[in-house]
Image 1 (cartoon, rainbow, N blue to C red):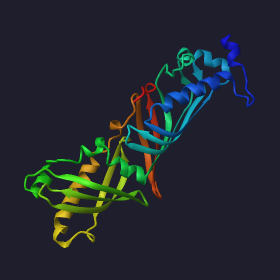
Image 2: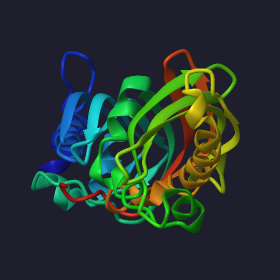
Image 3: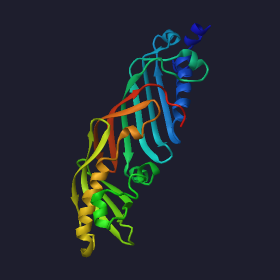
Image 4: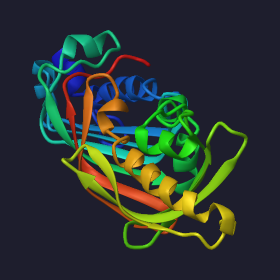
Length: 264
């Protein structure tokens, strides 16, 4: 009976097996995100009888307006694999399971607005509050330092402008402004290098302190963004390159998919 079902075609020439798998995969992937504007999945399997053995030719997911872990907005994300082995029995029960790990080409687009929203997420702010790093407490008289009001402006040639305020825990807020290069390191870290401190908008009396705090802030950022902290369960992102394009930050690389993640 199943063999007959995989051979059924609709008016567009798509067989029943592919349509069922597309539906199950779309529902599974969509539930991985807190919110999603659109999620589309395209599965190809020819001849369709291979699906009974759990073998498919390609799997592609394309999504827009995705929110990961409630706070991280992704404007666009796509994954595409070659041949994949899946559990056909699980598909029949409405689930998507891999028989073995696979890799997928990945493309991710972040917007400037989404990046700024991410800097308000607890997963990020916890690395920026009540810091007792010696280079900071030397300026604050031993008090913990907190960086707030962070704003990011994407620039050309893989650079960005970062603005923030440093709270020295003494009632004084020190404005910070700098440009820096953004790049990929070891395929999983986002590095912030070559900071250029800008002091034109900083009051004269605070410029010396702003210069020192700005350098320290850049070092903190450079050690903060590790993609493994943001991975979905069972999926690891690895990046080959990134580039700024207008108000977008575009990543290309691949995903190591050990299993289809559980719902967050």
